[in-house]
Structure formats: structure tokens, C-alpha cells
Length: 223
Length: 211
Image (tube, rainbow over all chains, first blue to last red; front, side):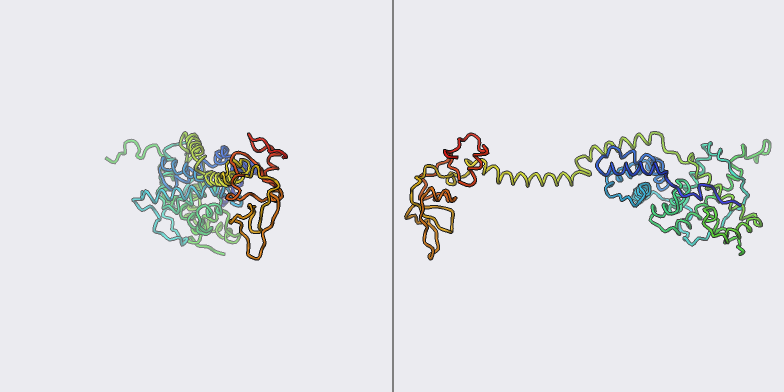
């Protein structure tokens, strides 16, 4: 039994050349050369959008929140201290912006899965179907992508945030904890729950149902 | 070490992260070989992580970058005079006001004595040998008998010539020596104005004889 992926065991590390370039851009922006600010943000565009989307679950709201987060980062760039990672700082601003909008909108009508459950680290899987390895080609199908996105959207916010930052955006456990302002232990507990809940949600479909061409064999219609 | 299913479920995520100690890892691997359900949980969880880790899953909307750059450009140009800069601009404005005030308070008056009150003009045509009186309490010289000569009772008034008094920096009394004060005609004070004349700072006026 091997453990996951290279991605799982490797801490996300920006190449040195990229780090040096980022520091130089930061220095220039903080010295007043604000026109290069976009270059600083560009590598993290996807991250800020998906972070906002994970919280708001709406494309246009997520884009607006992502833009606003970038503008706030621009306005307060002088407050950024180099002991933190710029990407983490930017993610924190995005999380705060999206949460603020969400609280204002009161958009959550239905209680999502796991909202009332405690972070005690226990979760009992509901489905023990044997999964084959899912080929990544399945993601070429828009329908499958939509189903996966919908499944994440059903998670309670605290699980969804951790899952998106760690498993979708590949932040380390430490970076996720820092961005959300929670402990490392909480990140690990919520991550476990999110993964197992998603597994339960997706098991029937990814176990085969989504890949069968027809739910019924020809001539065996139930009516 | 032996682990049961509940223990495995609690640690399956950490197992995938590589964050369990070697003893527990070994025990879990033994358990996976024997337990079909836990193997299904492990495989399913691994599939979830791999699928959601794919960049194709959540795509940034088309045109996102362009719209972000446009908004940033708008914000940047509008904040030029209100965002980051106001504090600096206020500081600069305050400094300019202080500097301007100092300049008005010094340069204008000292460089353009004609802007003073007529009564504050420098003396003109005072007879050099005119006997005048001065005291230690002021920098004004007076004609004999002037009631505005202020001095302490125990201090006798000093007597000297007008030229000597002006040389020492005294100025005529605006009451008893009013006739020697006329606006627009300069008779510089010995210490300050002579220097200014020398530097040609006083425009439109000829330096008095002797300077």
C-alpha cells in the first residue's frame, strides 16, 4: 500500500528563481512602482478565484470577491511583511473578503453536510464499495467536472475551505492553517472529514454509475 | 501494534499525507491487507484527492485576467490622489505651508523694507552730529527732552551722536524724530540692510551712499 502521490508528500515550494523575482517585484511595488503589482499577483490568479469560489459557490460573486481582494492587497501592500509568504497573505485577504460577502448575503439557506458535526476527528464511512483507480481522463468530461464541483459545494464551509486550499490549490497544511487562522490539528481533522464525506458522496457515481452509457439495458425498461 | 477499522478511518488522511509514524503505518498496511472495507476507503479517498488535485476541475472564467487588470488599472489611477498618497500629500502640503509662512515672515519683509509700516522705515537724513539719547531698555534713540525715552530711575540716559547711535543699531523715535522717517526712501540699518544691498536683494532701489 503506497501513500499518495508525490503531491501529497511534497511541500509546495516555489522555485528559487520565482521567489527571487517575487521579492524583487515586492520591493519595487513597495517603493512606489505600483504599475508592476499585477505581475506580483498573476501567478496566484487561479488560487484567489478558486478560494473565493469555494466559499461563495457562485462564479460572478467569486470573481468580484477575487478582484476586490486584489485591490485590497494593492492598497495595503505597504503593510505586507516579508516574513510571511505573499501567496498566503493574498489567500488570507481573499478568504476574509469572501467570508465577509457571504455573511452579508446570508445566502446559505440549506444547512450543508457536516455543519453541526464536531471536529472530534471521528467519521464513519457509509459506503464500502470497491473503487477502481479513476483515470484522470474522466475530467475531460464537463459533466463529471460539474458533478465533482457540486459535491464540494455541498460540504459545510469549514470543510470546504480546508479541502479547497489543501487538495485543490495544493497549499501545505501549515499554509492552509495560516490562511484560515486555525490550528494545524484542525486542518488535519477537517481535511479527513472532507475527504471521507466526498468519498461517500462520489462513491456510487465514480464507482461506475457515471460511466455506464445507459442506466438500463435495452429491452429491460422498468415501465 | 494492531489497529482496528475505526482507528484506520481516523488516520487514513494522515496516512495519505505521510504524517503517521512508522509503527502506525506498518500496522495500517497490515490491516489493509486483511480488510476489504478499509482498503475501499483508502482507495476511494486517494481517488478523491487525485481528482480534485487536477487543475482541470476548477477553471478560472474566460477573461478573468483581463477584467482583473482593467479593474486594477482603474483603481490604481483613481487612488493616485486618494489611496496610498493622501498621507504623503498632506505631509508635503503641510511642509509647504510652513516653508511658505517662514518665507513670508522673513524674506518678504527683510528683502522688501518698503512693505513695513511707514513708521518702521529706516531713518533718512538724520544729522550725523545730532545729539541723541539712548537707554539700555530699548533700541530707539531720542531727541533731547523726548518724554518717550524709557529708562530705569537709577539708569542715566546715554548721550551720543546720531551717527554713532545708528552705527550701534539704534533707530529714531517715531515721535520725536518723525521728520527723519519717510516711506520709500531707504536708510538701511547698519547690520542687516547693508548686507542686503551688497547682495543686490532689494530691487528697484539704489543703495544709499556709503554702502
